Image (cartoon, rainbow, N blue to C red; front, side, top):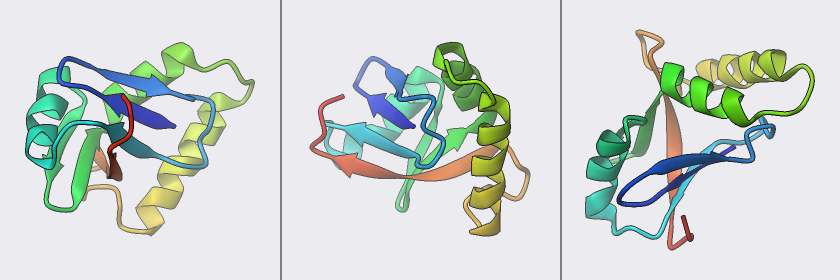
Length: 103
């Protein structure tokens, strides 16, 4: 699952791929936080991106096609939790940002 981030939007690409999660953008590092907030999908920080789980799930689910997607989503987020990538309140998941990628 890839969140393709531009100044005006955040699109969830490859929503059926619940084996990876990252943000891809061609924006400069200092513009990522503003773009994530403006798109309503999360926020940026020094470590990358914190993506709102409810929003991410809703957008990914809308484009998902594979049977069993809900279980795959749960497995992905549970795994992220074991790595400490889910916030303590369970509201967001950490994702790394790949810069220079077309969004």
